[in-house]
Image 1 (cartoon, rainbow, N blue to C red):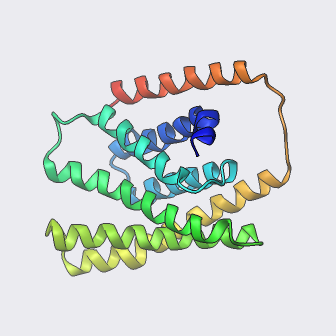
Image 2: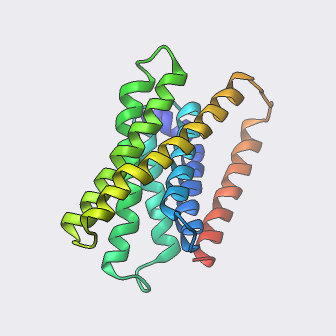
Image 3: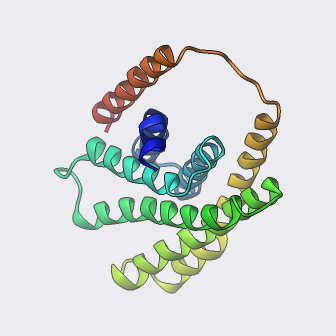
Length: 205
């Protein structure tokens, strides 16, 4: 695992930064059905990362990096404790749920299409359920109507859209397009891109 991280850490950091940018930057907009949009993008990025790195634990590591990105973007000064708990708990729920089902289904399945679609669908359901229970029974912020809407309606739409993106990624991966770039040049590009993402996240919060 240490060898894997040493070799691919910049890629893992890039995916974590992209998930964090999605959650902090796009999450700052008052979009209709914002939770569906954010969760679909985050799960789709986790799908892309898992396709590139089918290693157990990588999805959860990406989400931990994304959480640090959110803290870097929002800080602690301008958010209440409940707002901080909500945003970060939602992202952590996605990371935990996706890691569980990706580890159970993707490596063990001979049909990667079925494995990824099931991972997207089940991750959406579990993540939204965990977050809804947290909001309703721990923070006492939601009523039962909001709870059921989140679990059965919003999770279903997230599952549907993330499955569509997964199918697109799988179709593209089957084309097996390879671009030869020297490792030093690629690592330099990744490093500059990651730094830029963190700077953008900090100044656009």
